[in-house]
Image (cartoon, rainbow over all chains, first blue to last red; front, side, top):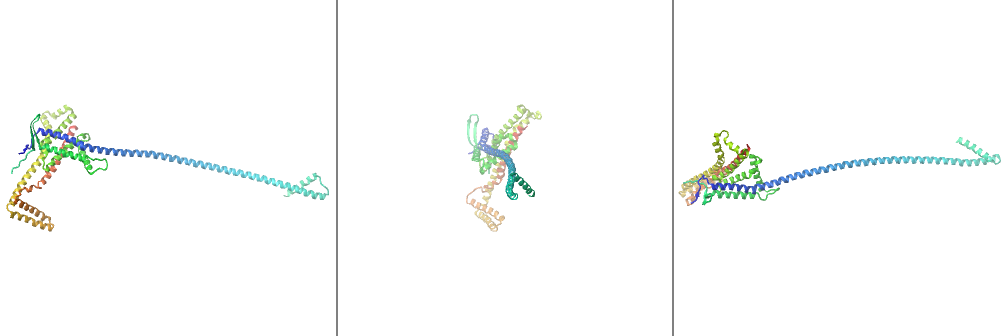
Length: 168
Length: 292
């Protein structure tokens, strides 16, 4: 024969046991379920936070690198410009120098040539003078019939040259 | 037919235990331990093999449950009461499993007032602790004279009846479900016996009933008319059961399956809603006690 409690019974032992059961159950649920899930969720949150922080940091680093790169680019462009400008200036200077050198050389050459022409002309004149004077002496000697003195000679040549020069 | 509705079965009785006297080990306790085993096993299963990324379906369910319970407590009490999450979770899960275990034909520990009273007392201690913490011991005692000293006995009663009312609400609902289920079961047994005794009293009657059911069942099946087929099947099954009864196998056939329909409300719906109500009241009372 099974024994039953009546429908509503106050049973202190059951009451105390159920309180203990509740606390035990609380502990078990906490240890085996809530804490574990919480740990995983925390780990996930930390991982996500870390990822975000890392991304932010990487971004900042990239920004720094980019700024440095842009600075470098700017500097090198400026440097390239200055080099180019210097080169242009040097080239211009050098060109001017070459031109002036050339002009000077040309002028020198021209002067030299003129001097040479003048010298040639003078020599040609002297040669012509000598020849003419010889011819004239010959003619004059034949005409006069005597040998002319050197004084006569010089006088005649000069006279002749003068007349020649006027005509020329 | 006699219908007797009893409390928990007493499994063992120990006499002359020091401090307690007579100690009765009832089904309430053993089933409670079974419930705890089930819950702990479920917790271990859900809480094992957890991963941070690439979670399994089991872990998704576990996290969903965790979020549900955390959001429930935070929604009712605010984030500063996170330490009560294990308590609320334990009460809720224990209540649900205890309520639903009756579906397996096992005595439900929540059909014993002592179970709910135990929970109610724990909540009562917490409520009192928070009241004293919020307004000091003197302020707490002065609260009983509020708004006028004449109300002192009523205030004391209302304070003491908080756990009792919480416990009785839950207990009453579960017990009423159990009582109604028992009554329905008993009524169906009586009806079943009467029906099959009448139908099975003579074999020709039983066979005729079977045939009367089979004919429209077959016709309905051929014409694909469920309206004819289903009643035909029911009548045919009744007739066959009557034949079996006539052959000497006497069983309350109507109690198979049919009690599940009211149990859908009394056990499933009632059980879940009572667990939810108990936890809601727990959180709200504690919050109220600490709040002002």
